[in-house]
Length: 152
Image (cartoon, rainbow, N blue to C red):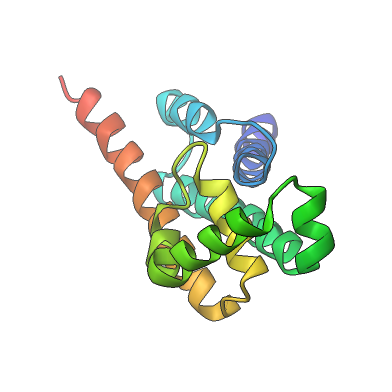
């Protein structure tokens, strides 16, 4: 009985940590762990949605903070970005950037989007709203698909 409670708690913490690391520039896939915990059937879907979303959003926030700490000239040079490419990226983000944060959950482009948002100084409130919405919907869809697959 006590062991089951510990496993449930560790499952949530593991999902949180996996989601957090997956949202940073480090490689990872919290969806696999979420699917495993869903299949185990020992965790509330709502709690899984909460912990996965929270971890993923906080990881994205770390990216944003990293981006906001990059000094334009030295940071761009350190990342190997020419002034022309930087201007292009900035123009693109100025045009589409804020709404594109809803897609911060996408593999490959999602993490850099959150860094660029920080570099360009998007407000934290807007950032958190858009990123949380996108990431929560992604996890909700995954949970929904898993539920559809489990119907006899």
